[in-house]
Image (cartoon, rainbow, N blue to C red; front, side, top):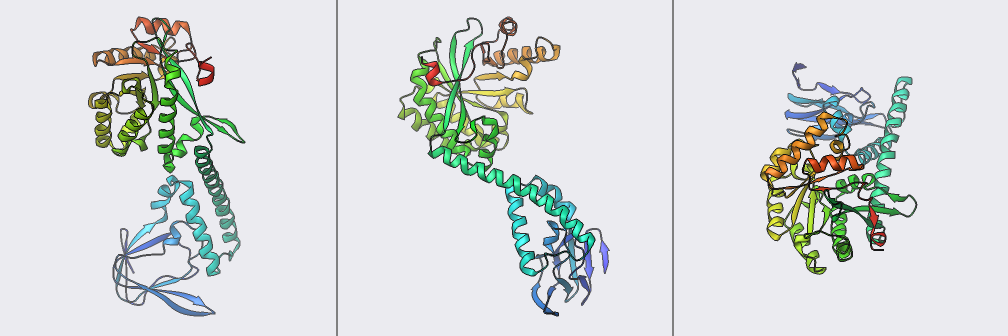
Length: 393
């Protein structure tokens, strides 16, 4: 047997690994033929013959138990070695649900093969360690599966609700518009913050249904909300997710919702973060351009916290910049934060954009933002998120 970097060459009849050997890699056949044998009732029997471009020994990539079969070369073979450490990080980053499914399949396979029991003290210890790891993955996967099921139920049982936070003119404090913020009234957990479930909805694709629900509810509520605004061009802001920017369907959904509730398109503002754009920048550009041509206004949220802010402002038809609270909340105590806020406002105005400063909680911050010529503000100084029934009173 010869070694050449990650390749191994075996001659006719050579054993690649034996049943019971420790396994830490899989093999991809670059050339030649390999036969697989298992022991049944004390007798070795051939169960498979595999050739070029096929993979074997792959159980070792996600398991650390002894080999469950013997592999031999029936002619000269060239194998590409795939070490466990090569895929360990990929598996670690894989969604827990996927890892859990792989481990369940693996456990059932080993039980069926009769190799589930350890054969030594060292193997017993290793098995205990793996069991603890598998239990942790199982727990996380179970939690995610349960929450995903709950989200599906919430969509059909009207458990979601919208809270609205006012966006006010910095100079006068008058309400110019509202941002729609989703909340979940879970039957057993109470009011659930969007930070606790939207990340999962994004992974499962349920975010598209949630996004459409949010848009419809905001459009339905807008006539009532609009009565409490004092701007010439009032608006309600609705957040967009990366999954919604996947095709022309979203543009048509927006059109349908606006038509259903007879809402002026110019009074809908769609908010997006830079992460919405990064995954499919060309698709995003096309869809955002269509939305802008319809008359929707677009806002970039959390400005300054991403990695491509200037490129985003240059390429996409953004009309409003929202400066993140991470900078506004510290601008009176941090020269760096104040410089970021000041520069962001100047940049936005030079590009013809309005600016909304987030996280305003004190009058002193409002006054400083007024001096910097910021247009709008959002934060507890102007009002906390509230249900429609409490705004309409």
